[in-house]
Length: 133
Image (cartoon, rainbow, N blue to C red; front, top):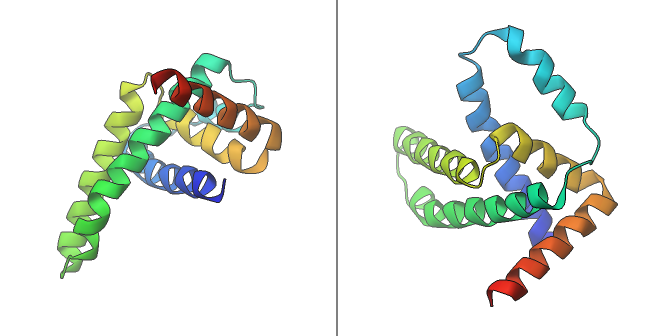
């Protein structure tokens, strides 16, 4: 469970950073829909939560892939380059599941504070693993 929450938190932070970079270039007029999504209650359907678990797994895989590269970096410039590559790949993985980075981040944040949603996500993830085993 702790590992699960840590993975979600790490993925959310990285995805948020990547999302911020992309959205910083967009017009602030688009802020209202994001705010309403951030405040949306945990009314996600099982399909969306399944996509979230798949995205979370993919984000975790990317983080693991870049972790050793990041630890062996000697210059801040190279570290920043590797971080940017990891963020880009994480965003691609999230979007390949059919979620937006914003939706992924919203769910990740809510899973950390909403026990009922966390249990739903855990159940969906377990069921999905059993089906794919």
